[in-house]
Length: 80
Image (cartoon, rainbow, N blue to C red; front, side, top):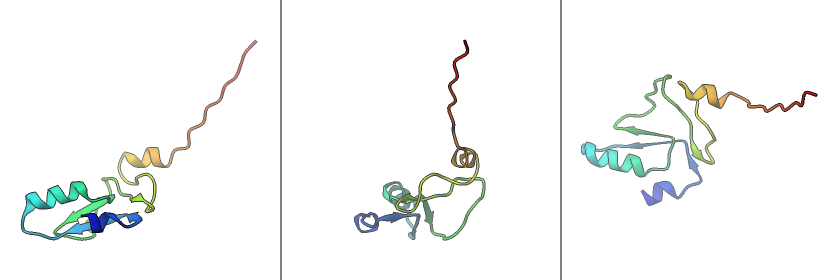
């Protein structure tokens, strides 16, 4: 886990094992936006996708896209 997390990027990772409980514990500790367990490149467009660290900011997919692609603006005006 330390070796995997020591890189500057964190788009995705995969864990291959027959021990599902171990895989779930490892997935929680990995610094990656997506962790695949016993598979690779399986993606549902309704769930968030994105990286951590130097692999990007924000998430695409599902309701997270609304926030990711929204530019907020504040306008203040004084009426006399």
